[in-house]
Amino acid sequence: MPIQPTSKIWHNGNLIPWEQATIHVMSHVVHYGSSVFEGIRCYAQPHGSAVFRLPEHMQRLIDSAKIYRMALPYSLDELCAAVVDVIEANGVAPCYIRPIVIRGYGEIGVSPKGSPIEVYVANFPWGKYMPGNDGVDVCISSWNRLAPNTMPALAKAGANYMNSQLIRMEADINGYAEGIALDVNGLVSEGSGENIFIVRNGVLYTPTLANSALSGITRDSVLTIARHLGLAVTEQAIPRELLYIADEVFFTGTAAEVTPIRSIDRIQIADGKPGEITKKIADEFFSIANGLKPDRFGWLTPVKVNAVEPVTA
Ligand SMILES: Cc1ncc(COP(=O)(O)O)c(C=O)c1O
Image (cartoon, rainbow, N blue to C red):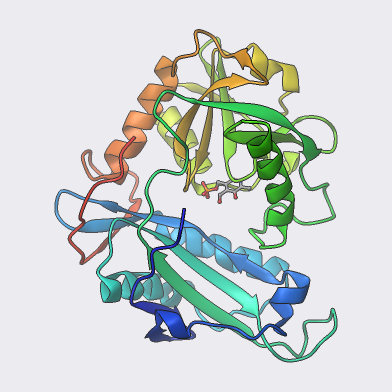
């Protein structure tokens, strides 16, 4: 989907014009993939708009930067304020928010020592990421997810998305909406940009973070909602074949939100329709995100922008 430009981008504490948020081709990040970033959604509310789980996303950004020894010159509160400032300056909601920390223009060579840390926050309109409402047809990727102690999977780093691109392109070329990657031990890990859940015999399963999966904020939201609904929930290693015989399978992510999976490798999941538990969780998720049910978990940060249209399931 083409990016729809807005007016301003937050850069190192200032709002600058969208078209001036450029970097030099010799910046460290261009050559060595040295960036960490976030993807956040701001949802329409009955009155105004609200960012979904803003502090949790910005804490993950801080954690990603810490893993890569990137000294961030801003506190959690300052980073959260930057997001609110840029959304309100642009007056665009609902929207997707992309904070990114890069190693900029300084020295050439792998060592990032002489390359300055630059922080940007952009926001722009963005609708659904996954097609349709009836569930998506996906495949198991021939690419594995990042092996432990190679590229840290808990850091949301730009470089990790080279692996994601391989998964996603292979799926596209073969006519699937997305690919599910296994970890190096052949256990289920995650999609190219989503965590994965299965339901079997009324129990909700998702892979552990030790299966090379990102600690998704939506994953955490779904686990919280499920526990609140009284469902049995387990984070555990999942063998590939359990996917095929599951009663329900769905993706979660800021982009994908809660997306049911209809088939995997052309094997239909149950009756091929979104399952009851998936629907219940998705309904709760969207109701809270869109302010239609009380924000009982404290997930919403209000912004002073009147939303144009809600993002719904
Ligand atoms: C590889 C990967 N896994 C999982 C997720 C889901 O994370 P979240 O729910 O925080 O968006 C994402 C999206 O950022 C991702 O890129």
